[in-house]
Amino acid sequence: MTTIDEALGEFSEDAVTAKLLRGIYGVIPYSPKFPHYNGVSDAVIALDPGASAGTIDRAIGLAGDSEQLSDLIWMSQLLDKGDAGYAIATGLFSAYKLWQGKGLEALENDNQQRNDAVLKGLGMAYMAHKAYSGSVGEKVAGFRASSGGQALAMYYAAVEVALPFADNAALASGTLVSDLYTNHGAKQFNRLATMASGHDLGGAKEMLVGITEPVGKVVNLAKGYIDPVAAAAKPFLPTAVSGGDKLAGLVASGADMLPVYRLLGARLAAESAARAAVTG
Image (cartoon, rainbow, N blue to C red; front, side, top):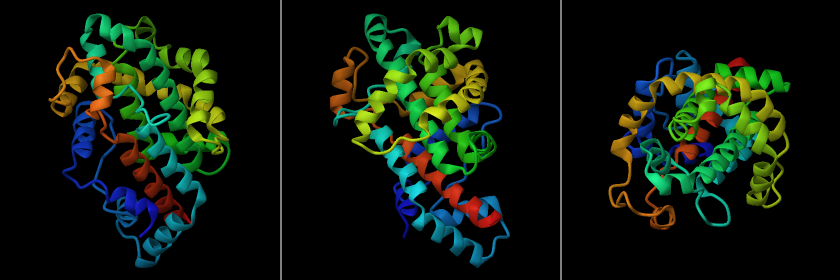
Protein backbone atom coordinates (compact mmCIF):
# COMPACT_ATOMS: atom_id res chain seq x y z
CA MET A 1 0.00 0.00 0.00
CA THR A 2 1.37 3.42 -0.95
CA THR A 3 1.54 6.48 1.30
CA ILE A 4 -1.24 8.00 -0.81
CA ASP A 5 -3.45 4.93 -0.30
CA GLU A 6 -2.80 5.14 3.43
CA ALA A 7 -3.76 8.82 3.45
CA LEU A 8 -6.97 8.13 1.55
CA GLY A 9 -7.69 5.20 3.83
CA GLU A 10 -8.12 7.58 6.76
CA PHE A 11 -11.42 8.70 5.26
CA SER A 12 -14.43 6.51 4.66
CA GLU A 13 -17.22 7.76 2.45
CA ASP A 14 -19.15 8.63 5.63
CA ALA A 15 -16.25 10.44 7.30
CA VAL A 16 -17.25 13.83 8.70
CA THR A 17 -14.60 15.60 6.61
CA ALA A 18 -15.91 13.99 3.43
CA LYS A 19 -19.49 14.92 4.30
CA LEU A 20 -18.44 18.51 4.99
CA LEU A 21 -16.76 18.81 1.60
CA ARG A 22 -19.67 17.27 -0.27
CA GLY A 23 -22.01 19.68 1.51
CA ILE A 24 -19.99 22.73 0.51
CA TYR A 25 -19.50 21.60 -3.09
CA GLY A 26 -23.20 20.85 -3.30
CA VAL A 27 -24.20 24.48 -2.83
CA ILE A 28 -21.64 26.17 -5.12
CA PRO A 29 -22.28 25.88 -8.86
CA TYR A 30 -19.50 24.45 -11.04
CA SER A 31 -17.93 22.63 -8.11
CA PRO A 32 -16.12 19.44 -9.17
CA LYS A 33 -17.57 15.99 -8.75
CA PHE A 34 -16.36 14.40 -5.54
CA PRO A 35 -16.55 10.60 -5.82
CA HIS A 36 -15.13 8.58 -2.96
CA TYR A 37 -11.60 7.24 -3.42
CA ASN A 38 -10.50 4.18 -1.45
CA GLY A 39 -7.11 4.41 -3.11
CA VAL A 40 -5.15 5.35 -6.20
CA SER A 41 -7.00 2.75 -8.27
CA ASP A 42 -10.28 4.64 -7.77
CA ALA A 43 -8.64 7.83 -9.05
CA VAL A 44 -7.59 5.97 -12.20
CA ILE A 45 -11.12 4.66 -12.81
CA ALA A 46 -12.59 8.13 -12.24
CA LEU A 47 -10.24 9.51 -14.88
CA ASP A 48 -10.55 6.57 -17.29
CA PRO A 49 -13.45 4.17 -16.58
CA GLY A 50 -12.03 1.71 -19.08
CA ALA A 51 -8.52 1.70 -17.66
CA SER A 52 -6.70 -1.63 -17.84
CA ALA A 53 -5.20 -3.49 -14.90
CA GLY A 54 -1.80 -2.52 -16.28
CA THR A 55 -2.66 1.17 -16.16
CA ILE A 56 -3.88 0.85 -12.58
CA ASP A 57 -0.71 -0.99 -11.58
CA ARG A 58 1.37 1.71 -13.28
CA ALA A 59 -0.45 4.44 -11.33
CA ILE A 60 0.09 2.59 -8.04
CA GLY A 61 3.76 2.23 -8.87
CA LEU A 62 4.07 5.93 -9.67
CA ALA A 63 2.27 6.82 -6.44
CA GLY A 64 4.70 4.74 -4.43
CA ASP A 65 7.88 5.91 -6.14
CA SER A 66 7.28 9.65 -6.55
CA GLU A 67 9.20 11.94 -4.23
CA GLN A 68 7.12 14.82 -5.59
CA LEU A 69 3.89 13.22 -4.42
CA SER A 70 5.40 12.33 -1.05
CA ASP A 71 6.21 16.03 -0.66
CA LEU A 72 2.61 16.89 -1.58
CA ILE A 73 1.26 14.56 1.13
CA TRP A 74 3.73 16.05 3.63
CA MET A 75 2.46 19.58 2.95
CA SER A 76 -1.18 18.56 3.23
CA GLN A 77 -0.46 17.10 6.64
CA LEU A 78 1.51 20.17 7.69
CA LEU A 79 -1.40 22.48 6.87
CA ASP A 80 -3.68 20.51 9.17
CA LYS A 81 -1.12 20.18 11.95
CA GLY A 82 0.03 23.80 12.18
CA ASP A 83 3.18 25.39 13.51
CA ALA A 84 5.19 24.40 16.59
CA GLY A 85 2.57 21.90 17.71
CA TYR A 86 -0.07 24.63 17.87
CA ALA A 87 -2.80 24.08 15.34
CA ILE A 88 -3.27 26.68 12.65
CA ALA A 89 -5.84 28.83 14.39
CA THR A 90 -8.23 29.39 11.53
CA GLY A 91 -10.55 26.79 10.22
CA LEU A 92 -14.20 26.17 9.70
CA PHE A 93 -15.28 27.22 13.19
CA SER A 94 -13.42 30.54 13.38
CA ALA A 95 -14.30 31.38 9.77
CA TYR A 96 -17.96 30.82 10.61
CA LYS A 97 -17.73 33.03 13.68
CA LEU A 98 -16.18 35.84 11.69
CA TRP A 99 -19.01 35.52 9.17
CA GLN A 100 -21.47 35.83 12.04
CA GLY A 101 -19.68 38.97 13.24
CA LYS A 102 -19.16 37.87 16.83
CA GLY A 103 -17.94 41.24 18.04
CA LEU A 104 -14.54 41.62 19.65
CA GLU A 105 -13.62 37.95 19.45
CA ALA A 106 -14.08 37.98 15.70
CA LEU A 107 -12.01 41.14 15.41
CA GLU A 108 -9.25 39.60 17.52
CA ASN A 109 -9.13 36.67 15.15
CA ASP A 110 -9.15 38.73 11.96
CA ASN A 111 -5.38 39.16 11.63
CA GLN A 112 -4.79 35.48 12.36
CA GLN A 113 -7.42 34.54 9.79
CA ARG A 114 -5.72 36.76 7.22
CA ASN A 115 -2.28 35.35 7.95
CA ASP A 116 -3.46 31.77 7.82
CA ALA A 117 -5.37 32.35 4.58
CA VAL A 118 -2.12 33.48 2.97
CA LEU A 119 -0.11 30.66 4.53
CA LYS A 120 -2.62 28.08 3.33
CA GLY A 121 -2.53 29.71 -0.09
CA LEU A 122 1.23 29.09 -0.14
CA GLY A 123 0.65 25.51 0.95
CA MET A 124 -1.88 25.07 -1.85
CA ALA A 125 0.61 26.55 -4.33
CA TYR A 126 3.29 24.13 -3.12
CA MET A 127 0.95 21.17 -3.57
CA ALA A 128 0.04 22.34 -7.08
CA HIS A 129 3.75 22.67 -7.87
CA LYS A 130 4.29 19.06 -6.84
CA ALA A 131 1.17 17.63 -8.50
CA TYR A 132 1.76 18.83 -12.06
CA SER A 133 4.67 18.79 -14.48
CA GLY A 134 6.08 21.37 -16.85
CA SER A 135 6.48 25.13 -16.56
CA VAL A 136 4.69 27.24 -13.98
CA GLY A 137 2.10 28.12 -16.62
CA GLU A 138 1.56 24.43 -17.42
CA LYS A 139 1.27 23.58 -13.73
CA VAL A 140 -1.32 26.35 -13.24
CA ALA A 141 -3.27 25.05 -16.23
CA GLY A 142 -3.22 21.55 -14.75
CA PHE A 143 -4.38 22.86 -11.41
CA ARG A 144 -7.28 24.68 -13.02
CA ALA A 145 -8.34 21.76 -15.20
CA SER A 146 -8.15 18.82 -12.77
CA SER A 147 -10.94 17.88 -10.41
CA GLY A 148 -8.46 17.60 -7.53
CA GLY A 149 -7.17 21.11 -8.13
CA GLN A 150 -10.69 22.47 -8.46
CA ALA A 151 -11.77 20.78 -5.23
CA LEU A 152 -8.82 22.22 -3.32
CA ALA A 153 -9.32 25.71 -4.77
CA MET A 154 -13.07 25.69 -4.14
CA TYR A 155 -12.78 24.74 -0.47
CA TYR A 156 -10.00 27.25 0.08
CA ALA A 157 -11.92 30.03 -1.69
CA ALA A 158 -15.16 29.39 0.16
CA VAL A 159 -13.95 28.68 3.71
CA GLU A 160 -10.56 30.38 4.03
CA VAL A 161 -11.43 33.57 2.13
CA ALA A 162 -15.06 34.21 1.20
CA LEU A 163 -16.71 33.07 4.44
CA PRO A 164 -14.52 34.87 7.00
CA PHE A 165 -14.03 38.01 4.92
CA ALA A 166 -17.60 38.39 3.70
CA ASP A 167 -17.77 42.05 4.76
CA ASN A 168 -14.35 43.01 3.39
CA ALA A 169 -14.46 45.71 0.71
CA ALA A 170 -11.66 44.03 -1.21
CA LEU A 171 -13.77 40.87 -1.45
CA ALA A 172 -16.61 42.86 -2.96
CA SER A 173 -14.26 44.53 -5.44
CA GLY A 174 -12.61 41.25 -6.42
CA THR A 175 -9.10 42.22 -5.30
CA LEU A 176 -8.91 40.45 -1.93
CA VAL A 177 -6.80 37.46 -3.00
CA SER A 178 -4.32 39.63 -4.88
CA ASP A 179 -4.12 42.07 -1.97
CA LEU A 180 -3.56 39.28 0.57
CA TYR A 181 -0.83 37.56 -1.41
CA THR A 182 0.95 40.76 -2.42
CA ASN A 183 0.95 42.36 1.02
CA HIS A 184 1.51 39.33 3.23
CA GLY A 185 3.03 36.61 1.06
CA ALA A 186 6.67 37.17 2.05
CA LYS A 187 6.04 37.11 5.79
CA GLN A 188 3.86 34.02 5.61
CA PHE A 189 6.41 32.24 3.42
CA ASN A 190 8.94 32.76 6.22
CA ARG A 191 6.41 31.36 8.70
CA LEU A 192 5.80 28.35 6.48
CA ALA A 193 9.56 27.82 6.17
CA THR A 194 9.81 27.75 9.96
CA MET A 195 7.01 25.20 10.11
CA ALA A 196 8.75 23.15 7.41
CA SER A 197 11.89 22.67 9.56
CA GLY A 198 14.32 22.89 6.68
CA HIS A 199 12.14 21.10 4.13
CA ASP A 200 12.65 22.56 0.65
CA LEU A 201 9.77 24.88 -0.32
CA GLY A 202 11.07 25.51 -3.82
CA GLY A 203 8.34 26.45 -6.28
CA ALA A 204 5.83 27.69 -3.70
CA LYS A 205 6.44 31.41 -4.31
CA GLU A 206 6.35 31.11 -8.09
CA MET A 207 3.20 29.02 -8.02
CA LEU A 208 1.50 31.43 -5.62
CA VAL A 209 1.96 34.18 -8.22
CA GLY A 210 0.67 31.84 -10.91
CA ILE A 211 -2.48 30.78 -9.07
CA THR A 212 -3.42 34.25 -7.77
CA GLU A 213 -5.68 35.05 -10.71
CA PRO A 214 -7.45 31.66 -10.96
CA VAL A 215 -7.95 31.45 -7.19
CA GLY A 216 -9.31 35.00 -7.25
CA LYS A 217 -11.85 33.90 -9.85
CA VAL A 218 -12.94 30.97 -7.68
CA VAL A 219 -13.32 33.34 -4.72
CA ASN A 220 -15.46 35.64 -6.88
CA LEU A 221 -17.71 32.66 -7.62
CA ALA A 222 -17.82 31.42 -4.03
CA LYS A 223 -18.60 34.84 -2.54
CA GLY A 224 -22.01 34.71 -4.19
CA TYR A 225 -22.90 31.64 -2.14
CA ILE A 226 -21.61 32.55 1.32
CA ASP A 227 -24.93 32.00 3.08
CA PRO A 228 -25.49 28.53 1.56
CA VAL A 229 -21.87 27.61 2.35
CA ALA A 230 -22.36 28.66 5.98
CA ALA A 231 -25.58 26.66 6.18
CA ALA A 232 -23.89 23.61 4.66
CA ALA A 233 -20.97 23.92 7.07
CA LYS A 234 -22.98 24.54 10.24
CA PRO A 235 -23.84 20.87 10.98
CA PHE A 236 -20.14 20.10 11.18
CA LEU A 237 -19.22 22.81 13.65
CA PRO A 238 -18.08 21.60 17.07
CA THR A 239 -21.05 21.43 19.41
CA ALA A 240 -18.98 21.13 22.59
CA VAL A 241 -17.63 24.68 22.33
CA SER A 242 -19.92 27.50 23.37
CA GLY A 243 -20.22 30.65 21.30
CA GLY A 244 -18.43 32.66 23.98
CA ASP A 245 -15.28 30.56 24.16
CA LYS A 246 -12.06 32.18 23.10
CA LEU A 247 -10.07 30.93 20.16
CA ALA A 248 -7.28 29.57 22.37
CA GLY A 249 -9.80 27.43 24.20
CA LEU A 250 -11.16 26.16 20.92
CA VAL A 251 -7.75 25.13 19.65
CA ALA A 252 -6.77 23.58 22.98
CA SER A 253 -9.93 21.47 22.90
CA GLY A 254 -9.09 20.13 19.46
CA ALA A 255 -12.65 20.92 18.43
CA ASP A 256 -11.82 22.37 15.03
CA MET A 257 -9.52 19.71 13.67
CA LEU A 258 -11.32 18.50 10.57
CA PRO A 259 -8.36 17.30 8.45
CA VAL A 260 -9.62 18.82 5.22
CA TYR A 261 -6.21 19.40 3.67
CA ARG A 262 -5.08 15.83 4.35
CA LEU A 263 -8.06 14.54 2.40
CA LEU A 264 -7.81 17.05 -0.43
CA GLY A 265 -4.05 16.60 -0.68
CA ALA A 266 -4.34 12.82 -0.82
CA ARG A 267 -6.91 13.08 -3.60
CA LEU A 268 -4.74 15.55 -5.52
CA ALA A 269 -1.76 13.19 -5.26
CA ALA A 270 -3.82 10.17 -6.32
CA GLU A 271 -5.15 12.03 -9.33
CA SER A 272 -1.63 13.10 -10.27
CA ALA A 273 -0.42 9.50 -10.32
CA ALA A 274 -3.56 8.42 -12.19
CA ARG A 275 -3.12 11.12 -14.82
CA ALA A 276 0.51 10.20 -15.40
CA ALA A 277 -0.38 6.53 -15.79
CA VAL A 278 -3.31 7.13 -18.13
CA THR A 279 -1.54 9.65 -20.36
CA GLY A 280 1.84 8.00 -20.27
